[in-house]
Image (cartoon, rainbow, N blue to C red; front, side, top):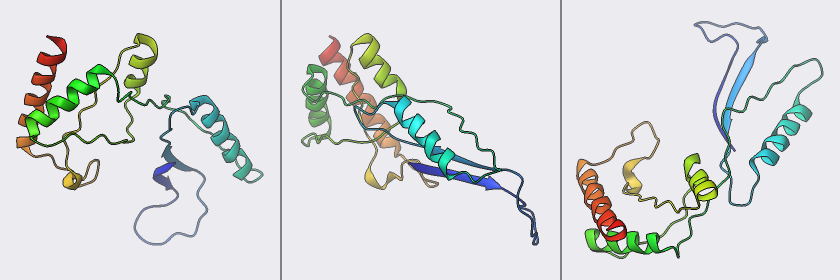
Amino acid sequence: MEVHGIAGGFTGAGSKTVIPAKATAKVSMRLVPHQDPDKIIAAYKEAVRKATPAGIQAEVRVLSAGPAILVNPDHPAIAVAARVFSEVLGKPTVFIRSGGSIPIVGDFARHLNIPTVLMGLGLPDDGLHSPNEKFKVANYYTGIKTVARFLEQYGG
């Protein structure tokens, strides 16, 4: 579980010794394969309920939810993608398990029964989703070349 923000009470200049009437927290949870989002939500709501003191109202609002997905590394589309990456970059392809929140990937797998090829072109020092996130223009061109070659080899 990640806590992205907490807000409440007096936040202006100077001091104030009051108990806030309202507070909020924004959280997210990245699931792993075989976890049921509905069960996780129910467990979280129960944990919040148990932690809420008497006389206090707590509400959990679910903005979105989706199950985790594990892409099959043995699928032919993945083999083509691996070959293309090696051709374009001149190095062996390395598969990593990476948490991400792209709910449509799970929908493609469950409802359409099609694989999704996720091609990561960012570098470890790009600071993904950080305040100083960056992505080199050269990597965009590498990405274009990689995707084009993938489409030629897998789709053509």
